[in-house]
Length: 587
Ligand code: ADP
Image: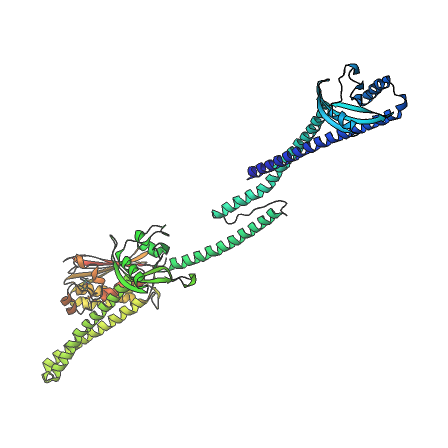
C-alpha cells in the first residue's frame, strides 16, 4: 500500500516536474532571446542617435574610431555600412577586405527604413551570429549601423538558465519525494492498520480496536467508524453467542434427542442426547443427515414428513450392537419458515427414549394381571365353600367346620396378600422412609426371632442368632426393618425341612451386614435373580401351601433400596440359601 502510494506520488511529481521544466525552459529561452533582440535594437538606436549628433564631424576615420569605441563598450561587433553595401567601418575585420554587404537581409530591411534582427552564419567570422541593423540619415545619405553578437553567448546564457531550472526542479522533486514518502506513510499506516484489523475481525477476533494519532481527517473518521462498527459487532456477536449458548444449553438439557435438517437434509442443529444415542461424531453440523445417521427407521420417518409436509409420530425399536433394545418415540415435523418469508426451511426430528416407560407399563399390567390372578384363587375358594355350606353342608357339623377352616385360611391369605400389596406400593412410592429413629438392629432381630420362634419350633427348626456387640445404631423405621427380617426369616423357616436358620449381624466397613442362612431346599441358579420379582415363585404349589404371597422378597428388595443398601443371595440346591443384606449407616 505504502509502496504503491509512494510510487504514484513519484510518478505524479516526475510528470509535473517534466512538464513544468519543459515549459519553463521553453518560455525562458524564448523570453531571453526576445529580450536580447530588443536590447540589440535599443543599442543600435542609441548608436544611431550618437552618429546623428556627430553628423557634421563625420569623416572616414570617424567610423573606424566609432566602431572601435562602441565595440569595446558593448562587447559586440559594430559595423557601419553605406547605402550601397560598402563597409565604412568594422570593429572585428579590416573594412577594405570586407565584401559588399548589400545582399544581407538586415541591410536590405534597413535600407527600406526598418530596423530588423537576423540570425545567420557569418562566413567572415565562422560562427552563428545575431545581427541588428538600424538606418541613420546623415547629410542626406542613409548609412546603416549594424551590431552583431555571436549566438554562442546567447546559447551559453540559455544553457545556464536551463541548468538553474533543472537544478530547481531536481531539488523541488527531491523534497517532494521526501514529503511524498512521509505522506504515503501517514496515509498508508492507518489504512494498513484498518486492513489488518478488518482481517482479524474476519477471522473472529471481534474485539480488535485501532488507535490512530492526530486523527482529525477522514482517516481518523474512518477509524472511529471502524472502531464503533467493531464494538457493535462485538456486542451483536456476544449477544448472538449468548443466545446460541442458551439455546444449546436448553437443547442439551433436554432428555429428548433433537436434530434439525435443512431442505437439502444438511444438519442445522443437533443436541448431545441425539449425538450420544446414535454415536455420532462431534462435528456433524452442515453434513448430510443420510451420510451421518445410519438408521432406516429415521430415514423412513424423515421421508414421510417430507412427503406429507405434516407432523408424523411413530414408535420404533432400536438395537445397537452389544446393547439392549431401546424403544424410541419419534416425532417429526416440518420447520415452518414463516419468519424467514419462505414455506419450510427444513425438518425437525425429536425422539424420546420410552424404554423405561414401556417397561414400567408392562410391569404394571403384569402386576395387575398377577394381582387379579392371586386374588381370584382364594376368592374362588371362599365363594365355593360358602356356596357349598349354603347348599346344605352347613348341617353336617364336621364338614361345616372343615369348610369354615378353609374359608378362614383363604381369607387370611387374602388379607396377607392385600397387606403385602399395600406395603409394596407404599415402599415403592417413597424416596425416603417415614418415622425414622436410631435403633439397635440386633434388638430388632431378637424381637422378630421371638415372634417367629413358635413357627420354627413347629417345624423343629432351630433359630440361631449371632449378633456383634457394639453395632452402630441404625437410623430407620423400626416396622420396616422388622418386616424385612420377618420376610427373610419366615422364608428360611418355610423352605427348610430340617436344620436351622442362622441370623447374623455385624459391621462391615461402612455397612451393617445382615445374613439369613438356612439349611433348606436351596434356589436354582436361574431363579436367583428372579426371586426378587413380584409374584415370582420357584415352586408355586409349595409357596401357596406354605401360605406365601410371592411378594415377600420383592418387599425386602424395596426396603433395602429405600435405605440405599445392597442385597443378594448365595444358594446351593439341597444345601441351603444365604441372603446377604448390606445397609449403609451414618458414620
Ligand atoms: P413367597 O411368598 O412365595 O415365599 P417370596 O417373595 O418371599 O414369596 O419368595 C419368592 C420365592 O423365592 C419363593 O416362592 C421361593 O420359591 C423362593 N425362596 C424365597 N426364600 C427362599 C429360601 N430361603 N429358600 C429357598 N427358596 C426360597
